[in-house]
Image (cartoon, rainbow, N blue to C red):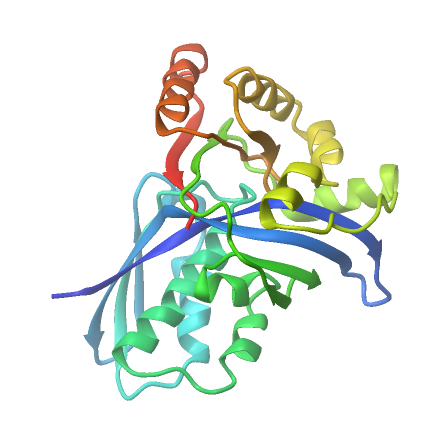
Length: 273
């Protein structure tokens, strides 16, 4: 039987961009959280590594042998290869860390089947700033470029969540460039307090530049705000937005309302891990 792992969708409950660093990256403060659903990876022992991609958003990956799954495999020493099938359920370039989550799932598969090298965090960071957080897929505060991780008690675990994307890919680079060109305002650090406090009183510094590129994000947020959420916000650099709810029923009602009003939008219901 193949070993399987879920590549849990990552969302930024708050994301504060502080400044642009001398190395060209941006100094960030963010609260990473993970939804109990996402892409699915299945792995079987093989003579050599291979990756096949299926699912609704498989077409968004130009070269399955050059994606983060294949790159993660190349960084992890093992006594045998792995034949991996990636079921791509999350939209690509969507602010959900989909590729990073896939890479994190590869690390967990290798850990289960063999073991991880002691320097796995450094290896993970070579794949992307948010990959180390995706390996454990547990709520953390990220600083620096997102690789400096601090634990935080998760007082939002089990919260019903709805993810919505207008089916528009939005690469990260243009959003950060728009922030630098047109906004470039350090609005301060993450709020102090519990995870709930940070989520409620934080913000996403990239919302406005992302909305300038993809105006449909404003419509998504407006529709979510009308469903009585605890909070509604864009995740990462967009275009996916999320809403947290107090009850499953409220989330499910919201999901149905959006299906009725915007049937072409992608959505995913789940709970925070």
